[in-house]
Amino acid sequence: MTTMDDVSRPSRVAGTDEGISPEELRLAARNHGIPLEALRYDVTPAGLHYLLIHYDIPDLDPAVHALTVDGAVGRPLRLGLAELRERPRVTHRVTLECAGNGRALLHPRPVSQPWLVEAVGNAEWTGTPLAPLLREAGIAPDAVDVVFTGADHGVERGVEQDYQRALPVADALRDEVLLAYEMNGAPLLPQHGAPLRLIVPGWYGMAHVKWLRTISVLTREFDGYQNAVAYRLRRDADDPGVPVTRIEPRALVRPPGFPDFMSRARVLRPGPCTVDGRAWSGHGPVVAVEVTTDGGASWSPATLDPPAGGGWSWRRWRYEWTPQPGRYALGARATDASGRTQPVEQPWNRGGFANNLVQRVDVLVVAE
Ligand SMILES: Nc1nc2c(c(=O)[nH]1)N[C@H]1C(S)=C(S)[C@@H](COP(=O)(O)O)O[C@H]1N2
Ligand SMILES: [Mo]
Image 1: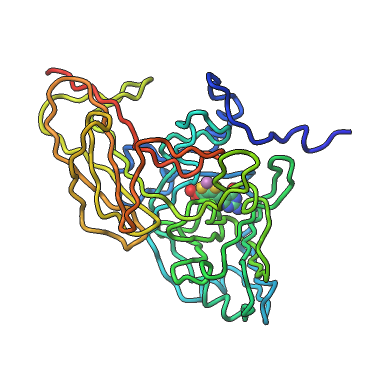
Image 2 (image 1 turned 60 degrees about the horizontal axis):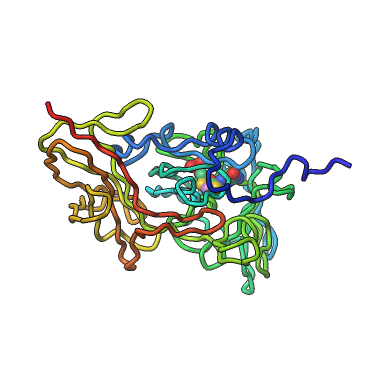
């Protein structure tokens, strides 16, 4: 008998010397990262924002698309896009990062979308706040989880499913959670969830359900695949693990100079140079960034630009550097208001989530 297991791969960690497979390459060609030079923009242009799609982009018609709110509510709702657009309208600038960012740099490497460090973007999301809608629907006092279902469908490790993620009710009711229909002032693009998606500022990407069609309130904990199986920090396959939630602090360097085509190593002329980048955290604002030019042996403080765009947006940092000819390994390390910072040892887990190990940018400073 043929079953879905014949096409669907189990979760796996690569062998010691195993390179990226054609299957991982195919995922990487669909799901692109931000080009690191685009860290120059405070608001990431939509086409340069990273992208992650588990299955296919669904074929949705905004003219007929409707959002259903059901489950443990007094008054189930059904709203079209026009009705959602008539509701109170807010815009939040939000840094979105995939929980798998950094995965392909882990040793051993969990086999999945092979991100290096580029699965991030900072966009302006416009929509209507979720909490008033849940209150209008009469959310039950004993509600536990709120489940968000996308219109995309697939199979993952043998489990056929719609893409679904739940939030604990207290998180779903936070003021900043949005039902978004615009990105950077334009209607959502198909790949970013058109015509409607969830935005959960501060949380890793998997919570921001795209192509949103149903919101269901549960009086028990949701046990769907993306919450109970996929997005958990586990030491090994038998470990029940803990859920992946908020974004760990990270700083990225906008690579200075110009790149070599194949190695992407940077070439720079000697003399004064402003090294800059962006830093963010979902656990509180970034309060400090330090820079290394020697692969982490020594650190110097960077200057933080004043916060721009509200508390959910990344922050620019800069560092004045006057290198002599030679080889350098640049990196930056963010610390947030909760005291979290970036590790110097990789934070390994079986899914390859939340790896916020300090980035390494190799720079060759050449004599004039
Ligand atoms: N319906 C649906 N929503 C989804 C996904 C998906 O595959 N299907 N991917 C999630 C993941 S893992 C991430 S990181 C973000 C990526 O959002 P972006 O592609 O707009 O950057 O969308 C999330 N929302
Ligand atoms: Mo993701």
